[in-house]
Length: 381
Image 1 (cartoon, rainbow, N blue to C red):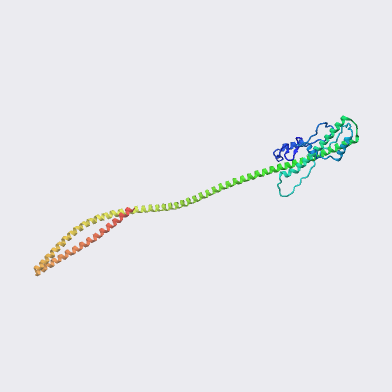
Image 2 (cartoon, helix red, strand yellow):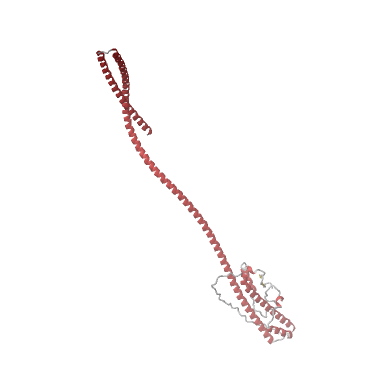
C-alpha cells in the first residue's frame, strides 16, 4: 500500500517534475515495485505485492468482476469447499516488443514535459489498479477456500478446474500486464533518456552560445584594442612624417647654411687677401699721405708766401698809384711799367701756386675718401 504511484505527486510522494533530478531513484522504484510474479496457490495467507497508497476499499467499489468470477462466487456460497491440490503453472516469459522509432523531418516543436508524461502516467495508474484489484480478488478467493477447508473437505473437480482456469487466466493477465508495464517502462525510460539527451543538448547549446558570446565579446574587445593601437600608430606615423618633413627642411636649410658658410669662408679668404692688398695699398697711401701732408705744409708755406706776395703786390700797387699821382713823367711811366711787369710776374706765380695748391687739395681729398671707404669696409668684415 505504501508503494502506490500517485498520479499527482509521483512515486513515493516525489514530484513527477523531479525525474531529471532523481533518475536513478525513479528507475529503482519502477524496477522494484512494478515487477510482479504470477500468482499461485502456494502463497498461503500472506498478502500479495500491492500497489497504491490509497486503501483497497477505495477501488473495490469501482471494480467489477468478470461473469465467470461472479458465477464462482455464487457456487461457493452453496457448496462446501474441498481440499485443493497444488497446481503447477506454466509461466510465460515476457517478450520484449521492439517498436520502430520513426523520425519525421519536421520543424522541432517544444512540447511540455507534463504533456508527454501524462498519458503514460494515466496508463500505468490504470494497469496498477487492475493488478491490485486482481490480486485482492485472488487473495479473497484463497481466504474463502481456507475458511471452507476448516469446515469440510470435498472434491469438486469442475470447480477446481474452473478455479485453475481462472487462476491461469489471471496469471496470464498479470503476465500480460507486467509485459505491458515493462513495455511502458521501456518507453518511459527511452523517453526519459531522450529528455535527458535533449536537456543535455540544450545545456550544451546554451554553453556553446555562452562560449560564442564570450568569444564575440573577447573578439570585440580585441578589435577595439587593435583599432586603438592602429589609431595610435597612425598618429605616430603622422607625427613622424611631420618630424621627417621638418628634418628634411632643416637638412635643406643646413645644407644652404653650409653653402653660405662655405661661400662666406671663401669671401672671408678673399676679403683677407683683399685686406692684405688694401693694407699694402693703405701703407702706400699712408706714405703718399705723409708726402701730401708735407706738400700741404709746403703749400701752407706757399700760401703764406703768396699772401706775403699779394701784400707786397698791394703795397706795390699803392706805390704805383702814388707814383702815378705824383709823377706823370716818362720815367715814372717806365718805372710803372717795370712795376706792372713785376706785378704781373708775381700775379702769374701766385696763380700757378694757387692752381698747384688746389690740385694738391683735390688729391688729398681723394686720398681721404679712399681711406674712409677702406676703413669702413674693414669694420664691416
